[in-house]
Image 1: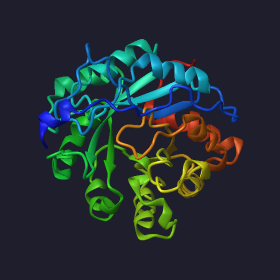
Image 2: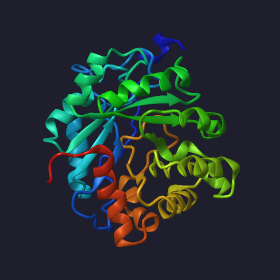
Image 3: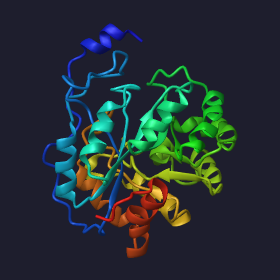
Amino acid sequence: MNTAASSASPPTRTYLESPTITHLRLPPLSCDSHVHVFGPVAKFPYAQNRPSTPVEAPKEALFALHRRMGIVRCVIVQSVMHGTDNRVVEDAIAAGEGRYLGVALVKPDVPDAELQRLSLAGFRGVRFNFMRHIENGTTLDEVMKLTPRLAAVGMHLQIHFDGRLVHELAAPLKLSAVPVVIDHMGRVDATKGTEHGDFQALLRLLDNPRFYVKVSGIDRIDAESPPTKKYRYGVALARALVDRFPERCVWGTDWPHPNHTHIPDDGVLVDALAEIATSTKSLDLLLVHNPQQLYRFEVSS
C-alpha cells in the first residue's frame, strides 16, 4: 500500500450527524456491541497505512448518538484507522464509567504484559482482519497460537473476514483456545439468500457453541439494496441467525460506518431490530443478556 497516498487522502464523511428518530423502544441496558471512534487526531493520530481517511468521530459524538437512541452500554472496536495504537479506545472506555468496553487491535507477538494491561483497562477481546481491502500480513496460524495467551487474561477472539473465506477459515478457527466472535455475519452476500453455500458454511461454524456472531452490518452485506428498502436481505439473514442461535448473537450499529458504499441511517438500523428479533425475549437476549455474558459488564446502569 502507498502510505503517502493514504495519509494525504482527504477526510470523508461516514456518518449522519442527525439520524432518524427511532420508533422501537429498546430494553433497559441495551448494548451497541460494535462501534468505532476516530480522533481527535491531534491527540490520537491516524495510522499511516490506513485504507482511507475518515472525518473525526470522537467519543463525544458516540455518546450523544447513544443517548439519542436509548443505548446504555457499548463495545468499541479498535479500527485500522488508528492501527494497533489502542489509546483512542482506551480513552473512550475510561470516559464511559463502566458502560463502555473495548476490543483491541494487536500484533500476534504482542507481549503478555500488554495483553494484561489492555484487559485491566476494559478490553474484552482482540480483533484480526482477513479482508481483501485491509493489508494484514498476519496468518491465521499465528492468531491461533495467540489464543492460549488470550485465555490467560480473559479475552476472546474477534474475526472479520471476507464471506468467501468462511470455508477455508472454519476448520482452523475451531482450534481457538477462547470463544470466537464473527463480525458482521461473516460478510456473506445477503442478496444470495439463506441457502447459499457461504451462509450455510457460517451456520455450520456457529453450530459450535464456542462461536458467537454479530448480526451487525445488515447495510454492509446488503449494500446493493437501497436504504429505502431497509436492507431486507440483510435483515433476513440476521433474523435467521437470531432464530437459530438466540443466545450467541449480539448486535451493533457499526457507527461511524468506515469504508462503506454509502452513509447508513443509524435510526433505520435500530428500527430494523423489530424485524430481526421479533419477540420481547429475543430482543432482550440480543441487546442485554448476550452482551452481558460475552463482555462481562461490571456495572448495572
